[in-house]
Image (tube, rainbow over all chains, first blue to last red; front, side, top):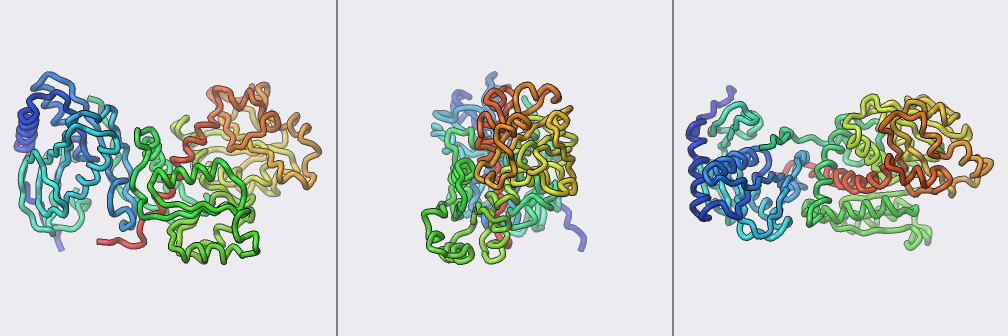
Length: 187
Length: 321
């Protein structure tokens, strides 16, 4: 059976515009960039976090701290996986206490990743608040979690995959949707 | 902005569901353990040094031999991962009443546990119980056979310092015959491409040690010439009653590591010791506490290595949707 072809929903230009809009919304909501810090979740959320931080920095002429987080150890399915995912480093080099944390991920789906990320952040200290920014909200939540900043709502069915590609590791910027089981097959 | 080196998200696993020894373990598997341990080491530096990963896992630490470092290190690793744990020492248990090892572990397993960490004076004890248990078994030292977590933490410590292990020249000095640390390190280090040689009194050198891929020396100065790492073994006072050594003083004079004897070593050399130290017997305090000594780093890294092993062995048996 031939592999289905992913349909591009967001191209490079729109992706960039989404991030600019999210950056502006963050500044608007928080009345500037004071006390802000950004934490990106593992591979692609981390790159998005850095991009959003750069945009905020250039608008507000500040240098907001950026952290990177691997949530593997906070997952709720460690014992259900046949193979353990490789653990990447968590690098939060600033004090989260009292900060407004913008948590960034590429796709919001069941909400379980975000649940794990919230637990992990709180283990680092008590932030003033945590807000969630995602590039894509694809629905199908299994937990009561919602995003504060959304690049694009993409209604999907459960047998579809949302594939986010970012220049930093995938050599292009795009978001596409395809029917399939494993994202790995389409990278 | 600083570019981060993020490895591609991949999943890999260890071949065996137990960690019984490093003999036959592949380089890829050792690399996986070391990489995982590196991430766990970062957790030990956090304000809250604990993650909820193994909440649902129960570990039993069975110690049939005394131990300070290994036991505390395992217990801390288990606690840092939020596992439940029970520890057991042979001299306060029904073992004193004559219960067999198999009965003991079968009974403990009947109380629903997931992982058994075992230290035992008989070589092969972990392998033996692994045959009868559904739980995962981790060898924390079996007689003079293997001590895989110790060797892994030694290898981790060396990789941390030298970045690569290939071609690293390592000399293991002391009682090779009774040393499980030496055996595990020989298997592990040679798999990783290091060049290992051993040195000690002929009475404490196993026959045909060369078949493990190492060179054996009976003269210390020869064994130290041009080497990067000296791994000093403990003279196991409890195993020396058999008259294999004329006297401890003679051992110290011939094989004791003193500052003078370090002259032939390469620049940026490292002194290691698995502990506990017999200060003034196999190593002088001056050397043990010197700037080139990584003895305490080994202990720190031990917790990270044991966390990595527990994590990697705790995956499921089959994929759950």
